[in-house]
Length: 313
Ligand SMILES: *[C@@H]1O[C@H](CO)[C@@H](O)[C@H](O)[C@H]1NC(C)=O
Image (cartoon, rainbow, N blue to C red; front, side):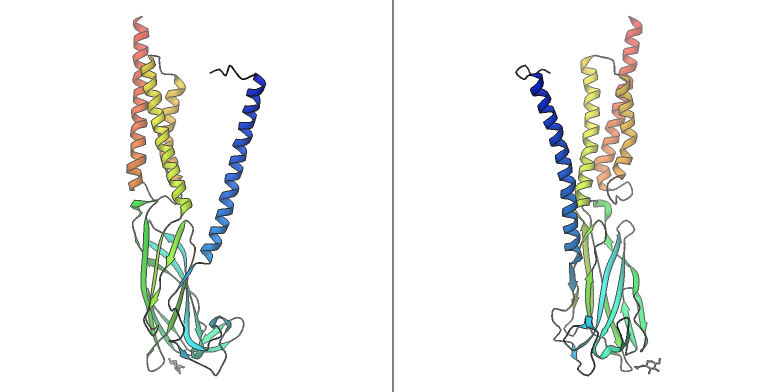
């Protein structure tokens, strides 16, 4: 192609400007991703759900001080800090860890380092029964929760789980008031926390739902679009080879075979991609591999055709 009106010097300048702009665009893109990520991480860390909107329904307690985390209002309840640590959608489980923190009349002894509970407590929690003896520190619990997930729709799949938390304390087996706080920012997911409780906060439903975060969705879509583009270009080259009437060139054959074998690897580069077989594979991987196989076949047939034609001359 010629640019007759441009001098060589001008063309060189335009060329250099384009290269500089290209690198500036890449650097700006990287900086933007980093900044957005930092801000997202911070806002996600601050995101949480709390089961009771006000503490009014909790029993008041005035005689001894409670630990700092109980707040200034002298109320009696168990704080349940439930953190979602990781999501394994392919296996349908989520890992959570729970810290129980007694307040008010439930506090036994406490100092800056640990708090014991003053009551014998039994808590039903997800698929476990947690028993705490009076005078014991309430150790953290970690557990696995089954989720309602369908990875088939990756990267647009969603999941949710919920379970009830309730318990009893003391010889009279009174219902335990619980104030649940849900939080957590597992990698690759964006969660929403919707805990609810009954009026006296003795039945708390831990409810969490989540979907893949924007980064995962964007990368997955870009990779899938790239796979389609590569396959279609390979088809276009094979088509152009026949139309031009020329013999297919060796690099073109190598290129199409390489692409064919690269496709599953490119596909697995999608972040947190589930095993092959999901809907996205039926819409992308299957088609691109089929098109690339046809391209390889077409290139070989073209080669054979021309070898035959050359031999007949
Ligand atoms: C907790 O239970 C034990 C027996 O298992 C009993 O000795 C103790 O007094 C109970 N503590 C309270 C505060 O009720």
